[in-house]
Amino acid sequence: MTDYKVATQAQRIDTAEDAASICQAIREQKPTSITLSGNTHSKQAAEVIGKAIGECQDLESLNLADCFTTRLKDEVPFSIGLFLKDVYTLPKFSTLDLSDNAVGAPGTHQLKQLLGLPHFRVLFLNNCGLGPDGARELATFFKELTEASSSASASASSSGSSQVDELVSSIEALSISNAGVHLEQLHVGRNRMKDEGAEELAKGIPFLKELKVFACISNSIKAAGLVALSHALKSCPNLEKIDFGDNFLKKEGSKALEELLDAQQHLTTLRIADCCIEDAGASLIRKIVGNTELAGRLEELDLSFNDLDSECAEIIADALAKFSSLLRDE
Image 1: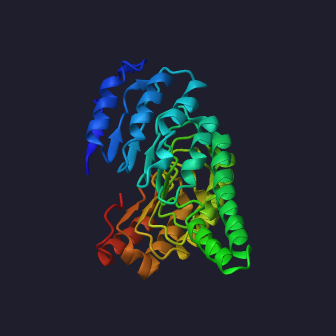
Image 2: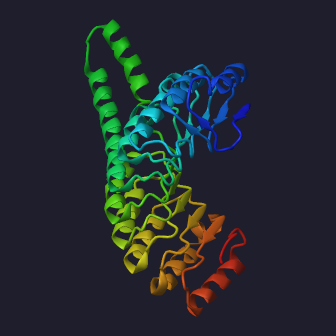
């Protein structure tokens, strides 16, 4: 694996000339991973760098975190599109990080085509100003892409009657079977979603059947929103990591989380730090450690900063004695 990384120097890359050395290095190295974060890029720079990126046939990962500081809010979505313009044709591209940019709801529109790629797996959108509108857009894309692939597959499988037609239909159906959304990781922390955004995002999560990691830390989501997310995540049978940290589970959310845990067979990490579980803590923790199969599988359980009482502390102490795989119980 070859990595190309521009030094984080808060440089202003305003013109094609400013970006020339970056483009040259990308074309010469043909890296599998590119990191451009920590510098600020204009539309002109994004366009020429995007063309160079599009020539990297083995590219797997692109880090564009913190790439547009001081740029106009209306300019950022357009620049994202220019960076990604030719990425859609790359056969191995699987990971994108757009964290710490003013993506907002308008910027999410640049991701729809990417989300439909069969090999695209990991999306970081932390601190992107998505809000409820951005969450709604993402959920809509998840739904539309999945339903479109299902509709196309049905059409392909039912059309034609001759042997040639049947052969063509079978090929089309095989191709379409890779359509939909194949995300394995979705990171949407610090986006001011609140309950409204969480409830909107929850409408799209059931379409992410291959999801393994879901993180929505620090979104000011109260119990109602976390209940919606917990119910939606029950439709994702391959979950390995859940991070609800720095939101407000309370009693209602804790009960919904208990139900979610019952539905998971592969979970290894649960982070609910600073989630105000308070009086519901004992019941939730007892549910976790009482499930021998789950507790024995967990590698990380983060319950820190939850104002847990002595009853919770006793339950945790007993759990640590029984299940040595638990790494974090602060």
